[in-house]
Length: 135
Image 1: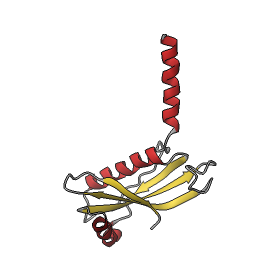
Image 2 (image 1 turned 60 degrees about the vertical axis):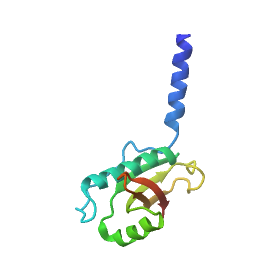
Image 3 (image 1 turned 60 degrees about the horizontal axis):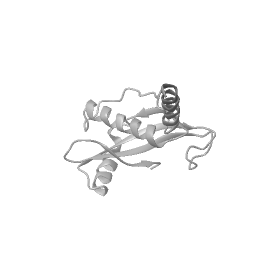
């Protein structure tokens, strides 16, 4: 019985590790100080994107994750309004797709740069993933 449990645990671990995207070696460069967001707000937004990528982007490897600066603040205000949120932030990501094409919606063996993630938040203060893609 113990041997069966160990085998089942190993199979479950393999299945779970095969799901989602690889975020093991993502580069998160330092960002310029923001006049809009605190460093803690930016860091928590980066974590939400990293976690979302890990869950949703099977067959892809996140290579770089970054806050593009305050230049997109006007766009953030528009996106917050369109999602009925108090605040929005845009986080950018670069990632590579393996030979499988990820979930089939990406070009196999391609690298995507500047992929934008829109995160929004309301009164609770927690960022949530609202949208992603090229702008």
